[in-house]
Image (cartoon, rainbow, N blue to C red; front, side):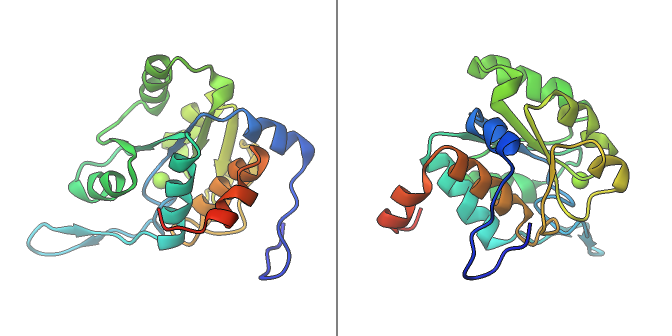
Length: 185
Ligand SMILES: [Mg+2]
C-alpha cells in the first residue's frame, strides 16, 4: 500500500485483526533491520547500518507495552548494541529461530497469536510459520514473501520495521496519543 506525506496507509481488516493481538514483536536483523550488507574490514570488525525511523518505531512499541526482540543467526556485538539502545531482548547465534521465539513466548506467557515475526530469508521461515503476524520486508526472498501475511513497501534497513511498528500501533489504537504526546522516546 503506497505511503505519502499526506495519506496514512490503509490496512486490510484481517491484517489489523492480527496486529491487534500482538504483545511481542520479533525481528531478524540482517536484511530486515539492515539492508543485508555486511561490511567486514581487515581487522575483523563488522559494521552494518540501521535506520533511525525503525528505531523510533521500536521505541514507540516499547512505550505501548509491547516487548521487542532481535533474533539473528550471526554472532557479533552490533545487533546487541543496537538492541540495548532500544530495549530489545537480543538473541545472537540462533540456529533455530522457532525454538528461540517459542522459549521467549513461553517465558512471557503468550500464545502464538500474540507474536509478530519479521524476516527476509529461509532461516526465518519456521519462526514466521508460528507467528500470529508474519511479515517480510520488500527485499525478502520470494520464497519467504509468498509465505507471510504481509510484505512491507520498504526494504530492510530502509523503514520496513517501522511499517510493522506503525501497523501494530494503529491496530491497537495508540497513534493519536503518541502524536499528542510528541516527546522523544
Ligand atoms: Mg535476514
